[in-house]
Amino acid sequence: RRLKILVCGGGNGAHCMAGVAGSHEEIDVKILSLFEDEAERWSNILKSNFLTVYEPLVNGGHMEISTKPKIVTNDPEKAVEGVDIVFMVVPAFAHSQYLTAIAPFIKPNTLIVGMPGQAGFEFQCINILGQKSSQLAIASFESLPWACRVDDFGKHVQLIGFKDVLGMSVVTGKECNIPFPIVDTIQDIFGKKPAINLVQNYIAINLMAKSIIHPPLMYGTWSNWDGKPVREKPLFYQGVDTKQANFLSKVSDECILTAKKIEKLRNNLKMKDVIHIFDWYKTYYHDEISDNSSLMMAMRTNAAYDGLLHPMKAVEGGFVPDFNYRYTREDIPFGLVVMKGIAELAGVATPTMDEIITWAQNKLGKEYLVNGKLIGKDLKEARAPQSFGFTTLDDLASELSPDSSR
Ligand code: NAI
Image (cartoon, rainbow, N blue to C red; front, top):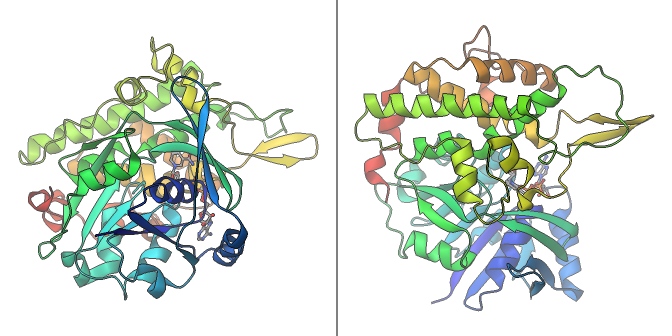
C-alpha cells in the first residue's frame, strides 16, 4: 500500500523533505503550511511548476529531483486525513501552532516526527495532544538530515550537505501500534544518508539536540561587541575562534555530565549516545570535515557549512547582529533552557549554560533564568520540563516511559 506522509512547514527543510520524499513513486506527499499566505502561494506555483531539489553528489557534480506534492494546504483536517506519518519540519517556535491545529483530526496509530524535534518536543506533544498521545508514536531527530536553503520559493531548494549519521528517538504510546517499521521506513525515504541511529530514550535525544551549537557561537562572537555596525557579515562556522569553540565545548560537557548523572540515578536510562560535540562532528560529518585536529578546526573545515554567515540586519554603515534569529530565538527557549531544566532535575550545575542563557534572554527581552534557577516569568513559553510542571526526574522518566520506546 502507498505510504502517505504530511510535511508541516514551508521553509528550507519542508521544501527539501517534500522533494526527497516525493522522489519515491510509492509515497504521496501532502504539505500543510499555516504561515501567512504560504500555502496559497505554493499551491499556485505548483500549478505550472515542479518542486526541484538540487543535490550535490559525493564525486562532484550534482543531480536534480523534480516532484509534485499532492496538495499544499492551510486546512489541517484535509492535510492530516489518511496520513501515516506527520513530519514537523518547522522551527520549534511553530510546533505548538501545528500540533494544536492537527490535534482534533489526527487518527490513532499515526507517527509524528519532529524533524528536528528540538529539545522539549515530546513534552509539548504530550501537553497538546493530551489523551490522544497514548495512541500515537512520537519520534524526534536531533537535527535536520541536511543543510539546505530555498533559493526559489515553491520551486527550487538547494541541498547543501548531508549528515552521515543522525540520531532519532521514538516514544510509542501504550495503546499505539504503528503498522510499519519506523526506522526502516524513514530510512527508505531519506535514502543512504544520513544513516539513522536509533537512540534508546528521549531524554538522551533532548540532551543531544543540536540547538547547543548556535548560542555559544553567538555569545562568543557578540557578548563584547561595541554596538557599532560591521562592514561585512562574518562567517558563522568558518569564522569560529578558540573562544567560541571553548564555550561550545563547555556546554557540551555540561550535557554529558547531566547524562552521566541521570544514568547513575536511573539505571534503565542508557545515555551512551550523549557524546561530546567534537566527537559528534567527527562521527556525523566524517566525510565532510577535512581537518579534525580540534573542535574549532572541525567546524571551520566542515564542507556542509561552507559560506554560512552570521544572522545580520542591514543598517546604515553596515550590518548588526540579529538576536531575534532562530539561533537565539529558537535555540534558547527550545534548546539550552530545556537542557538546563533537565540538568536542574538531575542536580547538575551548569555555569556555562547559565552564563549564555542570561546573556541571550536579555537580548530576546525574555526571562527564563533568575539567579541560576528556572523560575523566570517567561518560562511557560519555553519547553523546559519545568515549563510543563515536571519537577522531578521521576516525572520525566515515568511520563514518557523509555520501556515503551522501540
Ligand atoms: P525556515 O527558517 O526555513 O522556516 C521558515 C518557515 O517556518 C516558514 O516558511 C514558515 O513555514 C514557518 N514559519 C516562520 N515563521 C513562522 C511563524 N511566525 N509562525 C508560523 N510559522 C512560521 O526553517 P528551516 O531551515 O526549514 O529549519 C527547520 C528546522 O530545522 C529548524 O528547527 C532549524 O533550526 C533546523 N535546521 C535547519 C537547517 C537548515 O539547513 N535549514 C540545518 C539544521 C537544522
